[in-house]
Length: 152
Image (cartoon, rainbow, N blue to C red):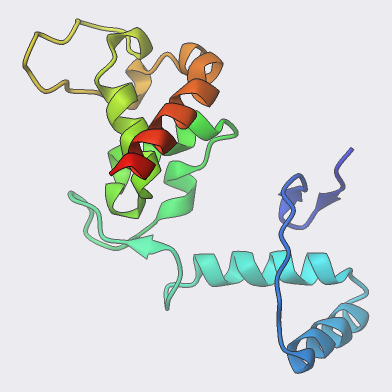
């Protein structure tokens, strides 16, 4: 079972290369606060993302001030995260994610509400997403999207 930490339940693994000086500084910081290096890194990453100077703040239509993007996008399910990102701030989608979004957006199977009229661009809202249906198909959608992106 992943350890509950400062940044939440740990399930993701990341390997990074850094200068020896930075690693030593992390070790000293961990000792100073009686934490693990991983906790120090999670805390630092969270602080950086939530910083208004260089963090994950973006301008969104209808908002007066820049908005912290992560809470608007985060979902435990990858498929829902990609859909939310596509709807809120599509500039950050990778090419394969753009392809996956197009496949999901255009397929009425994943949406409740009125069916899309032939030739019309679908209008979608997140609360109409059939996330359980999409999650069941997500591996296939990703595979097809990656194949399309690689074929371009």
